[in-house]
Amino acid sequence: MVRPTTILTVPLFIEKAYRNVIKPELEKTVLRRILLTSHLFKRIMYRKAAKKLYKVFGGRLTFFGIGGAKLDGETELFLRLGKHFPYAIGYGLTETAPLIIGANPNQVSWQTTGYPVKDVQVKIVDVNPETNEGELWVKAPNVMKGYYKNPELTQTVLTEDGWFKTGDLVSEKKGRYEIKGRIKNVIVGATGENIYPEEIEMVLNQHKLVLESVVVERKGKLVAMVQFNPEELEKRLAIYKEDAAKALEYIKKDLLKAANERLNRFSKLSLIIETTTEFEKTATLKIKRYLYK
Image (cartoon, rainbow, N blue to C red; front, side, top):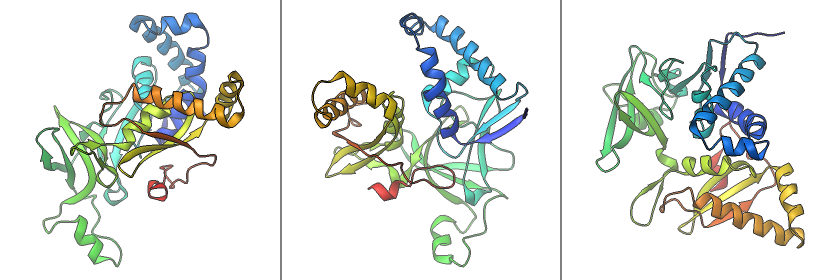
């Protein structure tokens, strides 16, 4: 039996384990669902479940590093309240080889990435005074010299004095950094507010019906493309007596309502579109968002 002490992975791995295995078990009965509404019982149940998860990985883990994308808030809450699972968060890019900011298992704070690592300088540029968010720039020995045989692209991301423009919007509080999303992905609302599709997708992906989602803007409206969980979808379709096409429309309307109840007024969705094929992904399991705009 393999019993690792260190694992490095992307959020999708642990998010799927939580949504498809851990969460259904936690909510298996009506009594359990009632108990989960109490913070005390939630903490107790999460700790028992996290202890089991720790044993599944061999019982010797000291470091479970997560990076490559932002970790879903509900999944992180489980890991945080569970206590027995030594997860850590890291942030970086290929151009920074790769770590810039991170937190070890004793430093993690919910939905933040952590602190700049040794010998890395960071600063937030063009800060919005209303949101305190701006672009993260970094300067360090691990930053690349430039893109291979592409000086034009290099000049767009590297300043003359060596600062690398990450292209990520961040905020900072008490030395901890929170990654809000890629600047190129931000959708500007009708009244000028920033809308982060990644945050809307997190809400959608927490629903039992949803495996994955991508949120885009079309004709001034927010639209979510969703890949449904086939097992859960089949259960829902069986409830309706109408034909499958009509039933699917009811289900999408229910999902739309459930998501919008949890979103702020700027981020509310106008439409859910089903996709029956998996979203294309990068090597780090990020959805190739540009393919779906």
